[in-house]
Length: 336
Image (cartoon, rainbow, N blue to C red):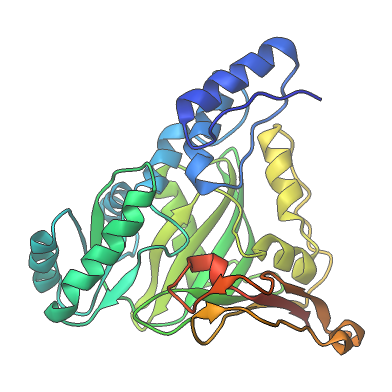
């Protein structure tokens, strides 16, 4: 066992660390779950001659404006959009696109800085909210103004093996109250129908950006006019989604990602067909947490796969948008 220390969000340092390790040891694959480190991981894999997604395709996914441009060029159903910097530009774009719109960082993730804007009066606050989230990261891609998409939100989990896409699951999402887009839960119903319209659009989006290898998490809205792509994440889904897929279908997304990074063909054969879901529990108000109990009888319920506290007494907590994912008090995973 050996290691090199590098900032995972600095692609140049990641590549240097990978080359240093490869001079001392055989390296079979490069893999990351951190979407802010996906570009560096893809570049490191290419440097070492290992399987992986094209770094250019990963960089396109990380820049939502670049991805939107590819969707438009390949006629993949998406949404009207504009890249902006100032609040004045955001206002001009919103009036041109038509309210309601969504204002978001072009390079962030995890719904950080994403806010629905219903009227011009809300623009300044939404711009400040998105700009502050964008400033936390190292990717300076500006902000996006997009037409608001109504309808349920889903994600499609895909494993791609040198250009051959294998759909692993369709995940239904629960969202918190608008104007924010905090994800409060996910639900997987067994293996998806390959003919599902959302699945077809997700695969078209992967082809549009040239993402041909590895595990991807594609987010869509099922609008009254059909599925529309929100974004592509070139990594396994977060929020325990790979765990839900394994519970519902028997397919191990984590093992598939590792196999693909090492040039192996993963076993993607479903072995069960049930439903699995997770619900994240948030505080209703901000303050200091004084008590958090989980009823021990949950452990006796056949449907309860786990119930886990993620904050402890003494922590400062707040409801969404608050501290983002760190606001979650606990989560429960159930099967049926």
